[in-house]
Each structure stands twice: as C-alpha cells, then as structure tokens.
Image (tube, rainbow, N blue to C red; front, top):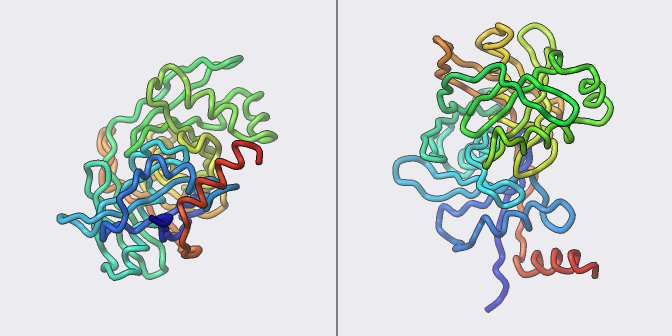
Length: 293
C-alpha cells in the first residue's frame, strides 16, 4: 500500500494560522490528534497554530474539530471557526451557515466587506480579581470561559517589572507561569495580556496552551479580552481588538447582570494556499530531524 496523501488548505484568521482538512466526504480515516504535531510543525511540516478538520453533519453544514499544534484537543477556536466557515462558503455552502463544535451550534455570516462574523457561545459570570502567585510576583487575574478556558491580565494593573519584561521580552514567561498554574490544573488555561488602545479599543497578546507560545491572534481570547474589558473597565458592548499581528477583530455582545449573550466575533479570514502532503514523507522528515540525521 502506498503512502497516504492528504489534501489540505492553509488558512489564516487575523494571523492565527491553520491547516484545514476537508473530510466531509469521509475520505480519510486517520488519527488527527497524532497527526496534528507533524502537520503543524513549522520546520518539518506545513506549519500552523492548529489543525481544523471538517466532518459531515446532518443538523448543520458541517462539524468542526480543532486540534492544537501539540495534538491536544483544542475545544472551540474562534478564528479557526471563521476560517472553516469561509472555506465552506467558498466550496458551495451559503454565505450564512451553521456548524457544530464541542456540542454547540455556531452561526457564521460573510459580510459585504469580506469579513466573517461568527456567533459564539453565551458567556456566564466571568470571575474577576483572582489572585495568583507566580515566582516573584502576585497577579490579579480575571477568568472566563468563552468555549475554552482563558485568563485575562490587564497590562496597566501588572507590577512595573512585569510590564517592563513584557515590553522587552514578550509574554511567554508570564504566559507559561499562568498557563501551568496549579489553580487551573489539570487542563491549564490560555493567557491574555490586554491593555487599553483608545476609545472602545483594546490590544491583546495571547499565550495559547497547546501551542505553548505566543500566537499572532486568538479568537476566543479576543472574546475573553472584550468581556473582561466591559466587566472590569466599563468598556462598551462593541469593542475593537488589535491583535499581535496588528489585524483587527471586533467583538460585540449583550450584557445583563454578568451574563453575555448574542456574542459575535468578526474579522478577516483568508485562504493562503492549497496543497497535498504525503504522511510517510512527513513522518520521515520529523523522525530524521529527531535523530539528528
């Protein structure tokens, strides 16, 4: 039997990049969790923050599974959902569609300017002011689940030495310390550092679990950041979010007594290229690299 070849599409949502495999015809019977690290490897694979797999679904246009770059199941991915929706729209689905992910139905719409608006899950009762001890510092964290677990750290409220570290060295060290903090065991959390960026605007940097480093954008993180900005700093119910890629996402919602409904994440999604990869060649490249050959 010859090597299995997988057709894929490389996509990006505001800099959050993905390998997408269309398996709506059940063309592949593969262990995607095991394959994700090879496909997402930036040196010996295609390279991506995560893997999106589209599957058939009777009740909606498709079902989406998302795997982090390390192969762990990623839960919901906002930018990935917008990319998956755009791909489906470009391959025959209507410009307004629904898809399922993690036991929830999502609705996506392609707007006239080409951006994709995705209605996210309702969000309940973010936890403000959770105190966390990390080496050398005590942090005030704000915790919210937007389809996956997130912590928001408000930049202006961090100790001055940490702000200086973030400005000079980035967020990976503080992100890792919070991501693996015992308070969030065993699953861990994504970590967002958020700051004010003008009227009705915030900027964010995200350390993503499963990628285990800062990414250029995070959709569920943008929703988390916007909701915390509203709950903590009285921001409006429509907020612009500037990502690390310097692309802009928009988050809108309705707020009532700590409950957030009609949550929409809107922003760019693009196909970068189409390709085909031999799984045998992919495995051989990574095996040789690990062996130092």
